[in-house]
Image (tube, rainbow, N blue to C red; front, side):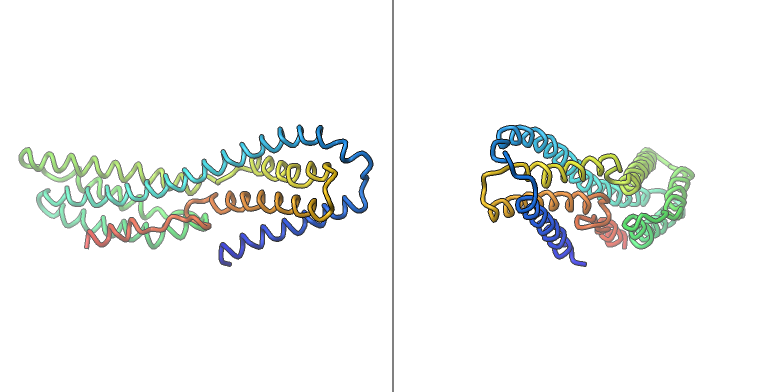
Length: 254
């Protein structure tokens, strides 16, 4: 389903449910003294709503940062792979061709085999690790003759280490689990209290205005929860990171 349609359904559904509850509470609930409770309810709503807003903002910012970090890590991994291959071009014997073939195979493995597993949470095949280790062994076994080749061999090794670090971070980003169960519990319970419980303690407004206020508040909070849900895994959902970095690497290695 399109993300905009799904998000619209989430928001509309929450707004309708909240509006119905507000109508039932105002029409059939206990209403005696409700306007007199506005000051006390307003103070509690300010505290609870403020704490909930801080929690939602913290989670959203953390997830946005994770998406940006995943994008940067993927680009670093692909760039370091190309740099290692170019540095290995100066090495003697068959090392140059062997490293180049392994680099192309590694980029294809990441793009075609690993990326779908990052999105659906499946097990990552060990092929990529094996290919990266073979590149490391090929560079380490190369006979360097002269300062230039020694420098290129060192550079290739350093770039492969950067590939290893970025790859590890990429896999950690996908397997981090997103928002934990405890945080989801706090988000959902806080949303219910902020959007449904406390607003229905206020009185003095007309029925139609009260329904609009509660519905708008519930829809807005649900929109933020939907955004959090979509950002849990940087390789899936609405803000998923595409494998464009490795597609570009394959073009440069062609």
